[in-house]
Length: 337
Image 1 (tube, rainbow, N blue to C red):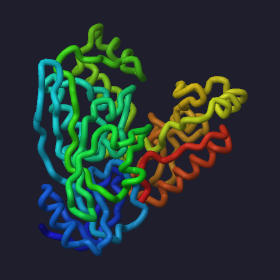
Image 2: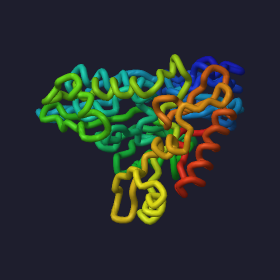
Image 3: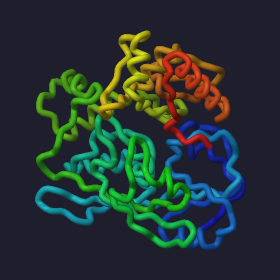
């Protein structure tokens, strides 16, 4: 394993931010990771996966561990279900494609989400009415301090909306190695009611969609609204949809009668952050090389040479304006470094 000094991270983050790592090493397997952790116990560490859920506002004064282990395998199956294990360094969408090619159902609504397999339980990624926790079985993770590998069940992970134990109590304590999912082989549960999936299927004349049809529809929707990071730097949805007390929503509704909402519990509702940002006048606005995408207000973009600090300043401006206008706070979904 070769530790590189002063490595540029521009190609390792989907915002395309120019920042550097004091030290950098690519991790190809569990043994490599254990060795690096054991030999560098006194150093500050920074774990880097697909770089799709972070905004770099500065250089990383640490040893950056680029998790790049690969592999997908079926570890168990019966007549109805299959258990598929993906190595943490696998690109998530490529993992979804692998499953679609074998008619394994349950993650088709999560097609084209950027990032790697290992990051999916950390964030409990979700889209179009589906979250990772719906099919997640377990993950294997290495404890940084001891190099011991531990298996975490679904219950262990404390999944919430874009949350898990790895973002809370165990943040920076473990590095995920593999993730196992339980997927359907037949009698797939087709979920098309959320977002514009039904409309997209109608456009193509599909009445009884397969999981591949749903995946194709999700891909078409995402490509129509979200920029390709290879062409325009971004990290997908920058903000979480806020979950607020009903009384806060009702108060905002007095001034903004068309404000949409989705019930979460008897006392809370979820409000689309994209709607709030668009109504606040930010959709399509540009501040130098930092801006808000013209087709999706949730997406902040780098038009070429924006710094992470400039993009973060735009995000903070959005947060402050939305709070002043609607009385609702919106949080970053992206990790700001």
